[in-house]
Length: 238
Figure 1 (cartoon, rainbow, N blue to C red):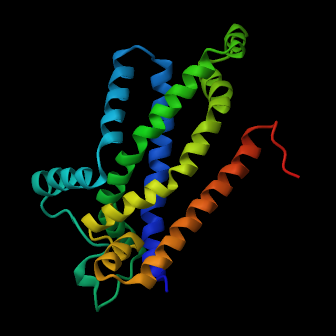
Figure 2 (cartoon, helix red, strand yellow; figure 1 turned 60 degrees about the vertical axis):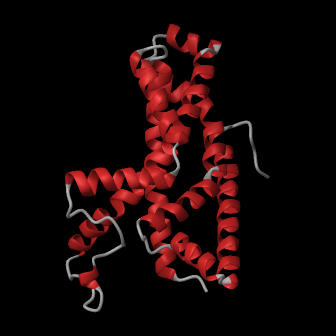
């Protein structure tokens, strides 16, 4: 039986990191395409290639080394909530709860964000470069439209379809990355539960988890199909 608390923790971790990585990758990818050939473009491409090729467990260990051992030894490196809350309940102030949860969420979410954003940046840059070379972009600039409008309203709108597809297809890889990340940070989620189930040879739990992962991938791809209809007026669903 899937535990609600673990499911909530995993969805929180994946949701926050995926949204930040997608937004950051798209924004920096558009800038990189706009500044093609510049030092900024080369720097963004290089850093994205590096983060895209690194395994999540290595990123996690480096972040722990930097933030916990070098910068702030008091920073939480594992768990979801402080051990002092166990048995006595959570504080009455909702803002204290949110602040502490965000503090514990920071390192695992940053790990998955760095793991994802490089792929989004590279794909956005490639599709934007293709869109910016089209004749309708030249026409839009000839009409005197602001560069921001040309980039985000005209070029990015046509370049967004492959990005939507990639984000949906990568959802399964994000879940697999969450398994390692949750294990490194002892994050009480489904990934950590699956890792322990594999060690304990708990077959029913493994079957349930694989079913949940497959279901999430199907839902993500279904959402991508719906987004296609919203982004591309040529696609009509009847």
